[in-house]
Length: 308
Image (cartoon, rainbow, N blue to C red; front, top):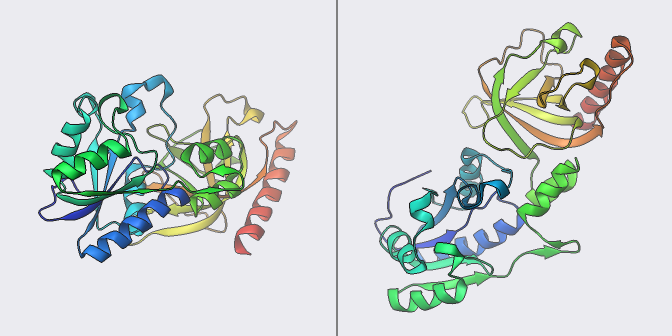
């Protein structure tokens, strides 16, 4: 991540890139090829928070990735540098001309700008690809619009991924994302019911507005220190929901690390959960014994699925 201006020429790609899904990667691959051909770095300009969180907070979408994960994925997809701009009232009021001059010309020294064909920018989204190209003629950069990726089910988009996750369809969401959907948080104390039942769980303290899959039980990977040099991961059975057997109201993401050993202590640690498959829906059980029996089945199914 960087907030420093570019000191030389560059190829720039701009967007929220929430999730950095398969469609985003098409745009980024074109931008990477353009940067290589010109012998200049590829700078990806993105925004935090999501512009909708400032412009229309009531309509702001849930996030498919934290800023840290987005930067990691953008660099993985070929960015030499990721410039995260704070999207606030000041930035939202820039005209298309002001945005181009302040960000693309003065800050990034763009030689070429690569964007999706539906790209909009400037106050009230007044600018599009045609306006950007016209400004480029005056300011000395070119514009390469990229046709949006699509498949048999329609456009590849962050909206589609959010819809799949809301249905609990994490495996199809992973195909669009090109990886399992990840939820991140710091492990916090809960009611310790899992430990009492023989299945101690890492209870994720979530921040922001993350996209949480539909209530249910999932096979997933639990990852400690996900972006650190000493990252560790375990197969996990993950509960998403309100624990209806105990009439608990807060919605939670709780992960049981399979075969990790009883001395595993992740309290206060940053962790990630990578969702692989939905095992079943959330349900209330008539007895604690019935719940424990089902939890054993969930763990066995998750273990078999993940180890295979």
